[in-house]
Length: 214
Image (cartoon, rainbow, N blue to C red):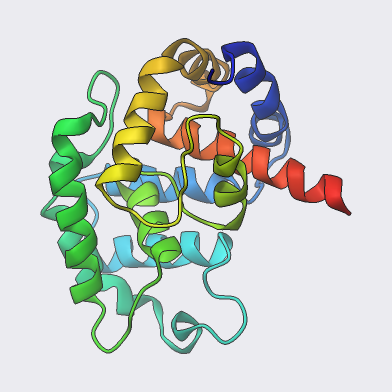
């Protein structure tokens, strides 16, 4: 049996508290990027700058990564690709369902092609889509650890049809809990899509599990 709704809401409370109580916290980089890509008046250069900073804030420029050796304009081809998939952007009463999965996977391939001479990881691809369209969670270390605990076996290693079907099923099964968390964040003047809430939940779950091992 899947995890109950109360557990989901309680597990996510530290993440929600950080957003609400900590000025200029790192988590808000997602808000800035997501808002920017919802603004039709911003040019590609400005959007690439927003995307680059969000990715840096979310750990994609650390160490010897390829992105660390490039400036923000490296993302301009990806910005152009994102604009071709605007129907995937999640808004209130316009969320991702199974019918959009083929387009999401098509976008994944376009992002891969858009980075010339560079093979983006699943983590980078999904962080880009989460930060611009809000239609998939970010498949990073903590998300994967947290997803392994889900009784229905959401193994978040690769953005593919199987994963997306299980994520959309998870949303259907836990819509009440997801919307309860959305209500907590209503004062942010930004819409937190279902997939963003799912990302927050499994990330926090994975983070807590890793911390408990220390």
